Amino acid sequence: MNLLITNIRQLVNVRESPTILRGAELAYLPVIEDAWLLIRDGRIQGYGKMATLANREFQEGEDLYDAQGATILPAWCDSHTHIVFAASREEEFVDKIRGLSYAEIAAKGGGILNSAQKLNDTPEDILFDQAWERLQSLMRLGTGAIEIKSGYGLTVAGELKMLRVIKRLKEKAPIPVKASFLGAHTFPLAYREDHEGYIRMIIDDMLPAIAAEGLADYIDVFCEQGFFNPEETERICRSGMAIGLKPKIHANQLHVSGGTEIGIKLGALSVDHLETMDEHAMETLAASNTIGTLLPTAAFFLRMPFQPARALIEKGCAIALASDYNPGSSPSGNMNLVLSMSCIQMKLLPEEAINAATINGAFAMELGQELGSITPGKRANLIITQPIPSLAYLPYAFGSNLIDKVLINGSFI
Ligand code: NIG
Ligand code: FE
Image (cartoon, rainbow, N blue to C red; front, side, top):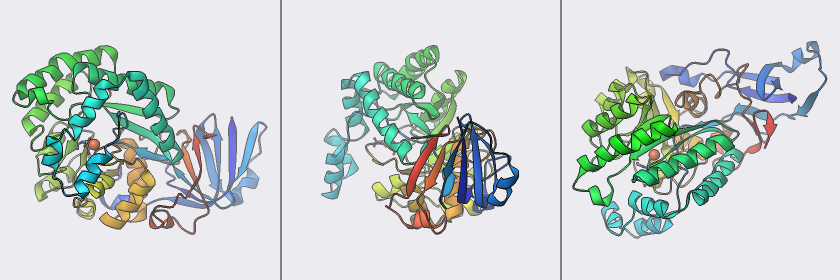
């Protein structure tokens, strides 16, 4: 199927040879005004200014779509989610409003362990159906590539069940899906006093089974006080790396944990969260090839200070934006809201935010040559907006759904 789109007011993030953007590069967002775009066999074939369209021969078998002044962007690349879960946790949300602390909620059986209990009690097919519904809603909100983590199993059977669900999502979804193994999300109750026992289970039982079934692309660890310390994080990641999984780490969320430095030492693809960064962590990130993935809706939902995005950019870091969609700290996967929140609360410029949520998000999933920009040969996963007066209007008009249509592999969904 071929599709020629005409009368595009702004064709956004047009790049001949995309690379990871860092520091000042993030503020440059290349746009073609008054453009056309040609899609062939689900991929971007060409583009140009409307004035040049007359020179281009109209070919048989081409559908025509008049964008009537809409703006077209690459679909969002959401590089950090936990969308496989068995149940929502709004009762904890209300408990927190009433003043209960994280420790009190955990003592009532809440938190990650609450999700793990429910996940282990839920059959694989039901988990799949629920996650598939979530994934479809996210595509309608403009998400065109996604990473999904395990980590609510915390048993061999539970983790494998989650990863098999993610594998089925990969097979069924029309968008790229990447799988991260997050067995090291927290210590199960039975291993509270036996960290070594649970780490041995991850290394000796979970990882070999994951390797045998080819269930994961990445290895993730929640490196945090009261969870996994930097030494444990390194050990688990190295075992994952030995079976070909690259690290993507939960780092510096609640405390200056050393997670950023460990991730970079291991050559992690990304270190994610980064609410609590000190000077050393920021300098180390800036001097590395690792992407810092910021999750503003998680900071918002937990009423935490937002990630120091301006300081990271000034130091020259490569940053991406992602939703962290999960039932405990970010019960939304709406990347349009992530974009707004990053501009409103972290003072990203709209251009920086769009780059961080598209091309850098794609690179944070090793999809930088496949998605995240308008580039010949890339998949035509695109957002067609309602008529908007400018690009800045997208993050500015927070809470409005400004997406008119979404194209996935060149087809309207
Ligand atoms: O990314 N920080 C660790 N994990 C999740 C939240 C887990 C939960 O509360 O279910 C996160 O925020
Ligand atoms: Fe997360």
